[in-house]
Image (cartoon, rainbow, N blue to C red):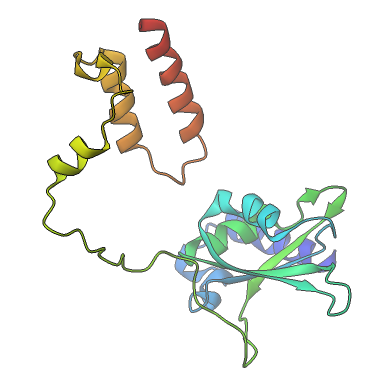
Length: 193
């Protein structure tokens, strides 16, 4: 708890003094995109932790410490973010947060992997080109269309459907509001039909 208060007081002093971001204590950790999380509820899984911490950036790697014999969580973890600046946000905003009646500690970390530990990011690599043969896109679309497909596909699109298509293309897949916005627009499309 003392380290949580110390970080919060340090952030408060920097804010009150109007310190330039380049002079912040966070700059000491610009070389690492890892954070340490302590005091986690034992019931949380890796997915739960990623869900909580993804509000400040995209986690690409997580290590939840588990008991070797039982496999149960030990209550602390490390996360690596895709963008280092996300670490600053997570440390400032989630340090001292109350999760399931436990106060968590979040701090910058320089994680050192074990020799046998896989540290590959969970980011998507270069897509492998599949052998498509000589088939054109049009031929594939024709082949996919079956007799059960309705003639509804041949009608002109409604303005609401056009807007839905634009939203689906425009909105970032990681945007937490994406599903809700698309659902609302889909409801408008259904009403217009």
